[in-house]
Image (cartoon, rainbow, N blue to C red; front, side, top):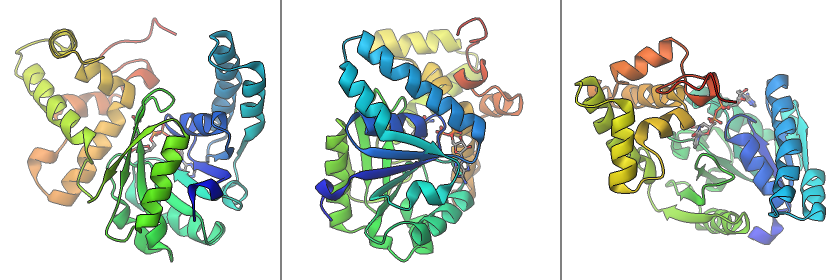
Length: 291
Ligand SMILES: NC(=O)c1ccc[n+]([C@@H]2O[C@H](COP(=O)([O-])OP(=O)(O)OC[C@H]3O[C@@H](n4cnc5c(N)ncnc54)[C@H](O)[C@@H]3O)[C@@H](O)[C@H]2O)c1
């Protein structure tokens, strides 16, 4: 398959990442079907598109015609089968839970055309832990977008031992067509490329917080005004979700059995209180006053 053969993209999971990946694919001219198991999430995703596209027109980033075309390109359904039956490329963006992803990939393998590439947007789970539930392991890879996917240019294309060079080439080219900058990871590695670097910074930031060395605000300020980061590690963690940080650490611990990989006490504290960051209105920072 060539990247020019990709006309139809399916996005499975319309949450934080999925609805943005679907929107950007529609803007770049692909026919996109976005699916989720939750009706309210799907409705929110559709409302987002209906607000976002006119907003881009107002800002002069899209013409009326481009916005209309993008809106026509995207549809939403609760049916996984309807979403993926004509897909040339599937991007899975459901919760970061291995068993769930394995179940979905087994279904995708049955429901999609045999030429379709099936990619996971997982932040942590390498595709070799999923590919064996399909009959097309060579067409399985990680396609890791960053949050917010409509804004962040980087996408990591991770090649597992089972992933063909063709799948990598097509995926890299698809990313370029989506106006992204793809990087090719030639090997699967825990945390992929950028998150390994970010994790090292976040671990250090949490240690300093928990040791009482500095506040959340001051640690963020140090990274922003000293290292030139666009936002500090705590603000970033509120954006990506403390629930995701917790789940990723737990998955890592299950894999390694190493107690130092467990989520830190302050992450656990927020997690058990349901303070996941921006999406719940509270995390390291309080967002309850802001829209
Ligand atoms: N949040 C981030 O910053 C970020 C960044 C890069 C990658 N990721 C990865 O993207 C994936 C999604 O993360 P998110 O933050 O968007 O999560 P999210 O919780 O916002 O969204 C996940 C969605 O999946 C849906 N879902 C659950 N089971 C489903 C099923 N069987 N079929 C269809 N939909 C189903 C849920 O209803 C939910 O809407 C995860 O694998 C995560 O690791 C997240």
